[in-house]
Each structure stands twice: as structure tokens, then as C-alpha cells.
Image (cartoon, rainbow, N blue to C red; front, side):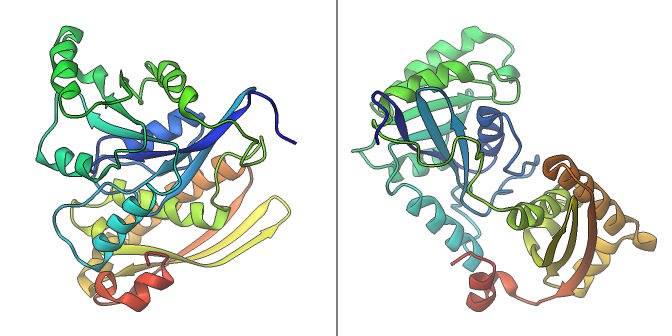
Length: 296
């Protein structure tokens, strides 16, 4: 039975790499479900975050940053994730950095369908020296497209996120809840465990290495409040394996420890985590491997 006046729908969060899409998702729903780091292209999979209010349910779809360079098999697959996420959504949030709109953003903007409401989200306004800089930038952006709304925010500081929700709400169609009201994501714990390991690789290793690895959860067992997780980090080269292990195994130990602590906070229980490294040369261009990792 439909609840009169209740609204629900999917909202795609789209933008080039490193504009803060995953941080925005996490802060909108009030819980960390999408991994973040200072490095671009951290997100590789479509993941939904769910916010349920008394009269509306927002299903935010976080997507990888649209990649315009380095188009190997992996990045082509990530771009397909972005474009496919535009299907069946009610609203698009096009996210850019404050005072920063360049050809990369323009290429993403051209992908967005004309028939779907697009809200421009100007993120990272906390980095501005003066808010007076915003008005001329907003006027400039208004000429790029007929946006349904332009909302400046700081996702990291929760600034103007209520205003953003208010701007989205009228564009959600009337209808029942899509997910149960106590659900916050469409992904299971096994998937999130792999992402939390990958997050620590992004945070604790150099600039290039994280883009050459992937994580596979080989075993995930729940025993009461304890989770036993066996995982493998796939790398391209033996030299990458050595970098991940680090001197006397310290780097791998730090990655595993920080990932385990993050899992215990999120899963609200003890985690026994084992992490191994496996060399799979050329995995990022291997169609079979990519499909097994969910990048098809």
C-alpha cells in the first residue's frame, strides 16, 4: 500500500575523480559506507547509501570518478559503471570543487542526460578564503547548463547538506520505500570488508601502487559477534608485493591492523583478519579477472 505523500528515488552522485563524492555520500547518510582517501579514483564500484526520513527515502548512488585518461580495461569498466548509473535515477548530483571547473568536469557534464534534473553541488567551500568568491563562480556555472538547483556545500564539515536534501526532495517521485527503513546500504559486509582493506592501501602507500592492486575476500565467516575474514591483495609485480609487505612486514601489518579496526567499528564486533598478497600480472587488463572482481 502506498503511503500518501511519501517520496523515494535514486540519486546518482557524478563527477570527475577526487571532488569528494564518497565523502558527500557518507555525510549525507551519517555513516561511512564508501571508502575515501586523498588520492583520486578511490571508488571503483557503484555503491548506494540510503537515508530514510519520515516522508522520504533518498537512495544515493556513489560512482567512480569518470576517467578521461589511462583507459586500461579497469578504467573503461569504471566509466561504464558511471554511465550505467544514470539509468533509472530520478535526480543527478553533479559534484565539482569550488572555483574549479575545467575540461575534465566539462566532459562529465556532457554525459548527463537532458531529461533528468541535474543539481550542481559545489563542494569544498570550506577551502575558500572568502565566501564572496562563490557568487561570480555560481553565475559562471549557471551558464554551463540549466541546473535544477545550485547548492554550495562542504561535505566534510556537513555545511549546507540539509539545504541539499531540501533541493533534492521535490524531484523524488511519490511512492513506497525502496529499502527497509533501517538499511543504510545495498552492499553486504563481505564487499565492505574488501573496500576497507583497499582504503588503507590507498592511505598508507605511495601514489602509484594503489592503482595496481585489488582486494579479494576469499573467506567471510560469522561466528556470533566474531567475523573471520581471509583476504588476498592482487598485485601486478613482485616489486609491488615487496612494497606492500614493507620492511620486516611492517607495512602489511599496518594495513591489516587499520582495516581490522575500521571493520570492528562498522560491524560492531571483533574481527579476525588475515591478509595475503598474490601476484597476478596484468590483472587490470584481464577481462576474466575483472569480471571475477565485479568490474564487468
